[in-house]
Length: 144
Image 1: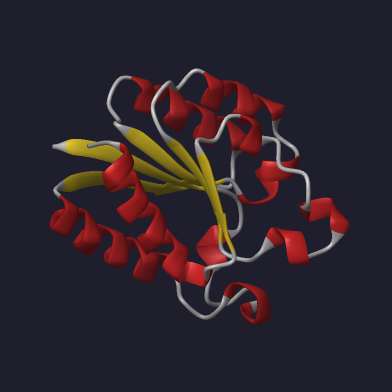
Image 2: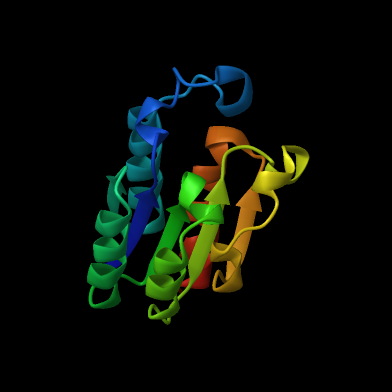
């Protein structure tokens, strides 16, 4: 079974509560449930994680190197600030999808320049929480 790591950065644990006008009302637990169901349908396994700590996300990427067929990552604020996460992702030589719930290009300028995009195989933004389901479907195709 192909294993996909789904990594979530800071503050995403508050989905459904934090700025629902931007991020919607779906919780991270609901997204995890969707991903688990979809993964079964696609014949995938998932390792779904969230951390507010940069080092934990880096450790997860390192762990994925030996286990995962692909990574879907919503680095949240670290998208725009973390060279360390970028460097970790560069060491993962399989498909990587950078995912954002909001359309970061419609937001303030600070959200326009992703460091992670420099190593991502694909980038998805603006599909809301449903973007996780789309990303998992894309990853199933990318890892066949």
